[in-house]
Length: 366
Image: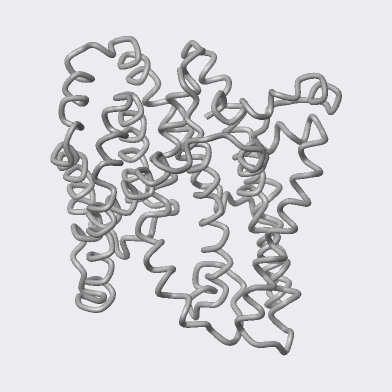
């Protein structure tokens, strides 16, 4: 099986976009409503790019996670997959719920002078809880499909995905989800039934797209400019024509077009190895787990400063990135800490003896 470096990049890009988006929330007037330390002066210019990202960034993560499971199960039985996913997803989820996000809440309480109270809360790690449930529920289906790649279902998928028209049923399923769930707003994913159902569908579709092989990837690459134009057109219509009255089904179509666009351009231009990718692939998971602590701590230190709002944003982003990677450099060197942050247990000695292990870890682990 050929290594898919572009999917490693997709995972890294997804985490990077999530971090930037969360930093930007602190500069929106509604930030405190969803539990973020908020700067006294908002920066309204950030909202336009944020609103573009918001309709596809979380579904995109679920798609990529489903793709990752496909690679993780290639040389594992279903028991081995559940064991590996438990270590990689469930352990960090429980650890983060008990030890990571509660620290963020304590910083929030201290900043606003609220009563200090330790609270067990998954916070941003709700995503991991959903993923683990999807793996448990869908593992039998995934292994059946893997063992029957020449069966009727997979053959039908390959036949459908030879043209963009074959994507219509997939998009239709996501439209059906919002028509049934009627989420308001559409972007309310965290710990909602809408987020759970949307994630389940995206996770399954991501697996199916990779299962179909080059057929899907060559098709979206060929039509990548069409997907980009559709996504931009729907975004501009939502921003300047429909506004808050934008129909839910158009949000779904826009979201999927952005995702197909990113997949296509990544497959075309990012399917290649590199030292940066090797490092960032390993760092992505610990950065995701830790980033809220550094956003909250940086907000506490930077927001009271008498400097322009744009400078606060850049300072907070730099502080968060630097803090996350400093923490990663500590985590990656301590075997037991690696387990709590979703990395394979390794000592420094083992990493020196097997220098190629890190390069292959992202694909094998998914």
